[in-house]
Length: 269
Image (cartoon, rainbow, N blue to C red; front, side):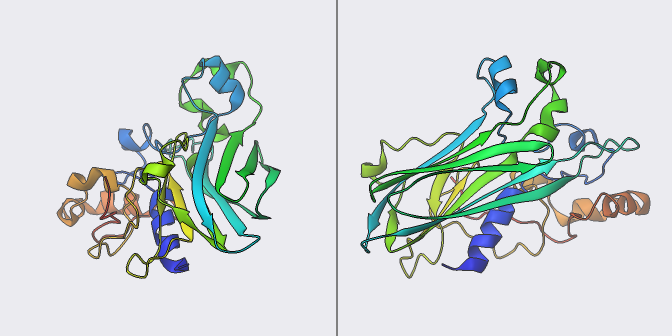
């Protein structure tokens, strides 16, 4: 597995939309509509919304074993939005990660907690030919939390995605006809790694639809966190800001954007 490449792609997914142009906390766009990808809501909230908002993310993949006992590593990552700052309304987030390692066939459940979040990662398989990873948000919610709106965000997993790595086998692309019956909920699995070498041992299951073997565009010299707003990512836009606006942009939080062309995924569908 090309660890650096996988991390680059996964981080681009993790922080997509984290901060939007004009990159200021006081901008309406940065007080509403962020963290739009990969939301997994608390089950109680999802039930109150009659299932309109998901409390589960599911990845199903086919594989071909090359060893008697294949080993599977699963990494689940998401952002946990924090309470907004009173003075600016800016909402920071912190990275969360769970790692599991199983031999196939497998059936395992791993609860996790990051105050106030509670969740569960579930791994099941059909022999050594099919694997399923489910991410559940079991965070308790109050009646006021279920009313709707952005106040539920601190109890929500956002930018949720899964990385699967297989030792002793290879994954089958979700685009192959034999994978048509795999059921993926809120996510789409793609092969990641060196396409020229035919690497098929790693899957990134992303809430952003990508093609197999996505790459960071070579012109991406920094992190702008808004690849879906490419028309507003031009460096000239930043250069037109006043000094006060640039100062505010720099002081948002530790995840400040660079002043170069932003992170783009050059192979998307």
